[in-house]
Length: 284
Image 1 (cartoon, rainbow, N blue to C red):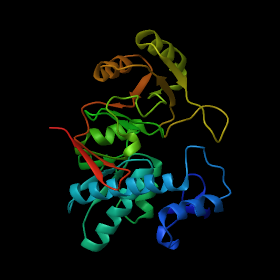
Image 2 (spheres, rainbow, N blue to C red):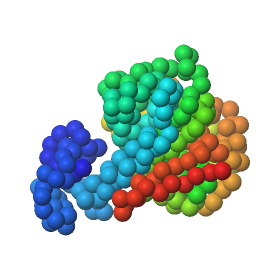
Image 3 (spheres, helix red, strand yellow):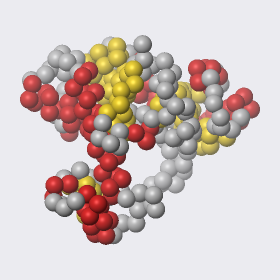
């Protein structure tokens, strides 16, 4: 898919059109598209980069849905841009194969995706145990330790993943790293109750170093408020860490609700690569 023209299909306010709509060579097509669009993109981003990323997300998501979802499955639906493709593929399979599934969302966005794609919606009160959860990640290291919560949904994502027999990660090549911090520079999200954000930030900095910053909203004045009515700190760290120990340390601080560190939870991850392939990372 290619982003071009005004619309609502892309995060930058562009509309998705198939590459076949421009029947010329890839290099020429990229030049043409970049010249057509009036929106100013970052210097390191082109429409062709966006095309490759979206294609990578789609392939990773489709493979995960095809390999890990069966008839009568109870499915956790994660949040974020890659999950959009997973829900679309799931809806295709439900329609073409007659699969019977129920879906538990991890956020308001995920709930809307389920509804918009005419998939059966449930919750953890009705369906407290799930067969599989498919979700994205901000970064995943070689041992499938994850940073999640860049979109603010980490608490519900972790709850849903924790009650799933399989936790499957889907992402594009930009999220794959050897060590956390190589690709993701915005830190580890920490959800906190509002009254405690300042003492929690001070405690994190005292115990672990780095800087804990209150996340500010972009479309309104003031801080980001999660779906659960809490605030978010982003702990900007340096170097390598024992992430299990870090997670435990942060969670012991009074006022912390949950961290965006997902340690020993994911069993398999699919990364859509820039060359069109899908890389599988599996833990025993």
